[in-house]
Image 1 (tube, helix red, strand yellow):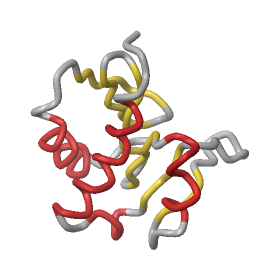
Image 2: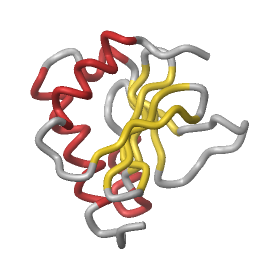
Image 3: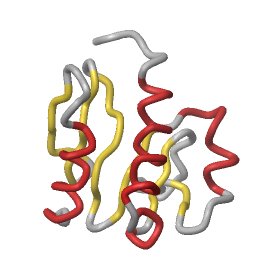
Length: 109
């Protein structure tokens, strides 16, 4: 599956101030690794976020968010957000910050 380059560019801009970010193709899309840990990415035109198990239940209550079920089974702590859920810069920032908050608790790889 290809990823939406316009969405990728928006995420790149948001991640540009973060130290030690690397882009990597995975999950049929594009992932942004922070200190070696997958943080967020794009699959199709959806935002993919690694938010951890603590933030997971509340995130799923948000409009346009759903379980990441890439393998056919939900991956706990990982969500997709439809493009309508991050149309504004403010919404995109909130989602990316949620993922960064979690990934920053993980040791570097």
